[in-house]
Length: 161
Image (cartoon, rainbow, N blue to C red):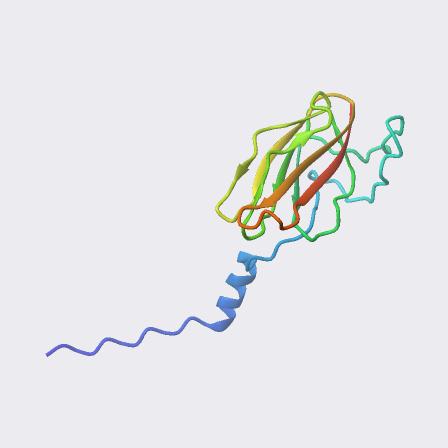
C-alpha cells in the first residue's frame, strides 16, 4: 500500500501580486522617451519652424525609444543628435494593421522597415541622418471594416549635430 502524498503548499497571494506587477499585466503607456543614462527628463518646447534651435543640452543621443498607443495624446516633438537611433513601438488595436513608417525628409530622419508582432504593434527604427526637421508618420487601418476611421501617428523630429 502506498503512503499518501503530502499536499502541495499554496503559493502565497503576495507572491502572485508581486509577479503580476512585475509582468505589467498588459498596461501600456502613451508616448514616452527613454532618457539616456544619467540624463534628467526635461520638457521641451516644440520647434517653431525650421530655423528654431533646440534648447541647449535638450537633445538625446545614442539610442532612445518611443512608444505610442492609439487614443493617447499626440506625441510631443523630440530633438536628437545626428547618429541617434530611435526605436518606435506603435501599439495595436484589435483588427487594425499599421502601414510602414514614412518620413517627410529621409535625408534627415530615415525610417527603417516596419514589422508587426502578434498583438498588432508596429516596430521600426528611425535613423537620425543629418541636421534638420522631419515628420515621421504611420497609419493603421481596419482589416475588417474599411469604413472604420484610420489611426494616424505623427512624430516631429529635430535632428541637430
